Length: 379
Image (cartoon, rainbow, N blue to C red; front, side, top):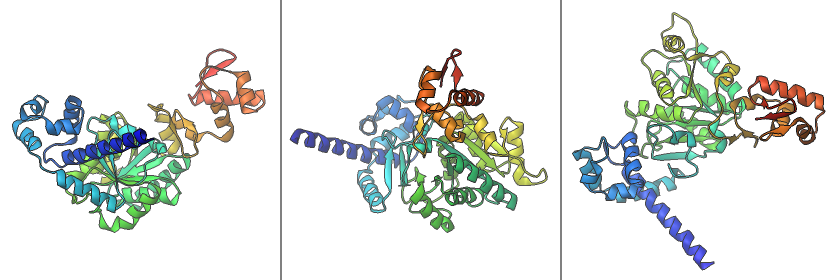
């Protein structure tokens, strides 16, 4: 028992040291997420990066003499300790990219954040997320369509991701909460400098039934550069992004570009042809984004998940289309594991053979199962 206790204590100490070094690395000016990722590929751990010589650091593409010297002579250890202490005082979780809570979808983007500051909780079901973004100068039409679409997405079981900005983002978060769903807000500032300030109550509500996230240090104030940078996290957390009202030069269009680079689906809601905030959406549609009018248009385009996940009802989900299944379809699908015979499905589901066969035909049309033979099917 003593050995196990010592081992646990040692593991906690190592994890705490790793957290301090990760925060320290996050504080170095000029060391962005892409370069940090390159350094980790070369040195493997934050501690090894900070212990490396300037000569060895410069072997990594993109690391010049000045940045190498900044890394070598970085003296942020006490500031890192203070940052961790203050985070805990404010009930803010610090999630490193090697932690289990870190979203798997973010690990696959070219420039994942090394540290996520999180107020609230991330769940496995958040892998089933759709980003909804748009203009800060939303029209009544834009607000109405956001509320309609988000409500439908939540009812299917999707988590809604957005940026807490004025306009469409605010409407998306509020609609998700009103529908009783989960929503994640990604900030371009630190959690102790919430922006915009009028959304403080909304952020508090989100943290109670979702999460408010940022990669920025606690005291970071919003800057114009931070918002385009944070958009890659919004899209990285999501299976696809829906753009509702966006001018040609806007943050929502930057999000769409990030989504394309990350191999996410891009959807756009059409608007009035004489409205400036419709021009970006129409441009995206002309360039191949999917025109979306309702939630079915989104689900039809989404492909299989990279890894199966658990939805809010506890069901295993391999494909987003499973979120639209009725109870009978779900029962039949859950009875199929690998190559399964019709008789086995009838026995497991406790449904008549006729209903099972009819349901399998529906699941085939939804591209959720395939027939191996006349008597066998597979997911």
